[in-house]
Image (cartoon, rainbow, N blue to C red; front, side, top):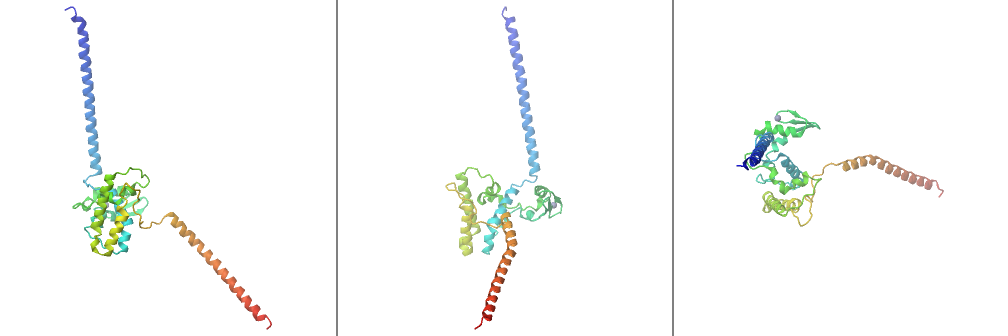
Length: 274
Ligand SMILES: [Zn+2]
């Protein structure tokens, strides 16, 4: 009985402290919960805005794949006059975004127009969003026609991040991409379909598949592709065009000079007494 009054304040303060801590922790827990709910809501909203119609195929990566096919494969296919089967995954019909991409009208540097409804946008990405929102029904999503799925085989990352090529090579990923690449070669250019097909099969392996290795440093597209007019090429062309008349003038003057000398010789010969 004597000790109780001395202990009571201590017990009381411990109870108060514990209660306080519980309140703080439960309120912070509530805050965390609220935060996570908020961020989840924001994420859902963002996802809703980005993918209003749930297309599991990247438009950007599909575009990269399309450009690679156009630049590094089609010139050779056209040269061989080879008709790719629509069963080949690289065939234009197997690109769900192709129709939309073909309905992009690049009017000016800051003007992109929708080929379906003629609405104008100041950047390509806004036109892409417009396609996603307004012309979703025109996407062919019925079959597995996502060109971006072939990106591993076609080196899309190499083309997209041309300036920052510092990712470490992953042997498992390289083997997977090589397998996909070889199956594309077999599916699109069956070696039993004649000379053109087997030549294109070999070209495809060399152009796309050989670089899927970690053991040696190999760059994709060693056979090159469609020549893009670059600044150096333009400068050389202009310089050549400017120098060509000068060259003609020099040749003309030289020949006139020679003719003059010959004429002079003939005259002097004729005038000499025999
Ligand atoms: Zn439109």
